Amino acid sequence: MSYARAISSALTLALLAACSDSVAPKAPVQHLIAVDGGGQSGSTLDTLPEWLVVRVIGDGGEPLPGVMVTWSSEDETGRIIPVEPVTNRDGIARAIAVLGFSDGAQRIQARAEPFEDVATFELTAVRGPVLKAVSLMNASASGHMCALDAEGRAWCWGQNYAGQLGDGTTDPSDIARPVLTSQRFRTIAGSFATTCAIALDQSLWCWGSNGGFDAGLFGNGTTEPSVTPVPAATGLSVVDIDMDGPTACAVTTAGEAWCWGRIITPGGNIDSPLPVKVESADRWRDISVSGSDRVCAVSLEYVVHCWATELGTAERAGLQGEALSPRPVPGIPPAVEVTVGWWNQCARLASGSSVVCWGSFLNGTPSTAPIQYPRLERSGFARVTDRAETVLALGTDGGLHIWGYKPHCCDGFISVTPSPLAPSHSWLDFAVGTGAYGILASDSTVHYWYPFPDGPPSRVAPQPVRVQE
Image 1 (cartoon, one colour):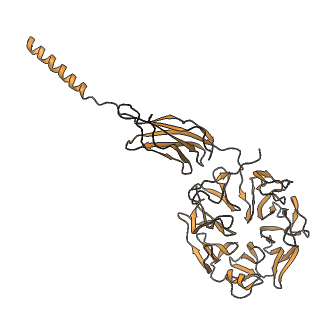
Image 2 (cartoon, helix red, strand yellow; image 1 turned 135 degrees about the horizontal axis):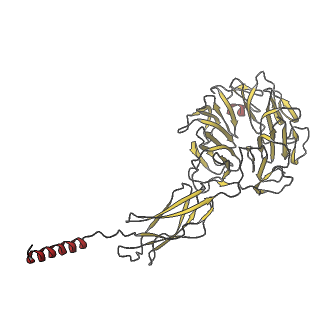
Image 3 (cartoon, one colour; image 1 turned 120 degrees about the vertical axis):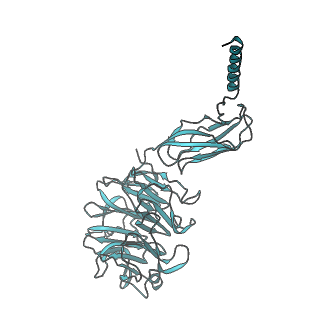
């Protein structure tokens, strides 16, 4: 190669290298930067103390003021409260994080238009000392709630003016307290200030108010209250119990129905401090009470029967004419359980796929003819309860659904048809008192939905029920 050609080639290579350097791609600019607030931890549903802080910068790294930043939580029950939703002169925006329902890692993301990049904050939610249980109290218009743990011990919390918590005091508590007894229970029920539970040996025990006008709600022949459990329903071996107002009814191991307090008989209402047998040729599997005016029960043959004090109340129960003793309700398909509210009744059908309700219906429109609710989305009905003016149902997939009025009474209308109750986790059991309650299937923790003050039930997260440490 000649000297001139060598010089030309060297110049060509230098020019190519220079051109290549001039068009080399620059590293992309991260326009949205997480500055502070990541790594925080707290109890589920807690508001975290430190702000989440992001900075928005331009292509040259300069802060960009006046940019709207939007926030989102990967947990559907988590919330983000913007403190400075628009960046200041330093390009800074801030927000407060409220942890969601799920324990473990929770991710918060921030975005700023028109940029596509995302700032991510890793947070951690932990559960505190919360109550673990396997079943909840079947409650009617109750300001307290109880639960049974895996060993059959009873725990109660809420109002306690008559000793209905069974802890030996009349002091209210928002923390679950153990009931003072050596008994272990399989089922628990309550109404207003009275609590009763079926022991493992099928005996009945009650505590709290022994009201029921002059008759008594314990069914033990007295009207004396008790702040700890005492024997009740004298002489009966009980498999099912329900109570509301001045009336209690139970189904025995023999399939007989017995009621006490202010009860319905073929001769009219009477007050009885001891259980009185419901005269019928049928044997029963389930029973439900609404005050002293209506009782419904399901026979062993899956037929729903009702009886009532007055003609109008009987008609509300779906019967024509007087019914002072059990009569089959026409139009109700074979059912396995019945539940009676203040104005209407619901039954879960033997097929397991549907629920029917009838009476002066929950949206104020009378409907003595049964209204059938088809299968829930992706599941059938596993259980249903109608308490006061609220209906709550558990799907076979573990999802909770609610309709009627917010518990407890007159706090606002929810829905004519079943509305999902958030979050969309699987639930083990449920109850209605002054609010809705549920036991989370994954870890048996008990949670409480106050009557949805912040929005529809599909968006409101429940609060965990704390336990006495």
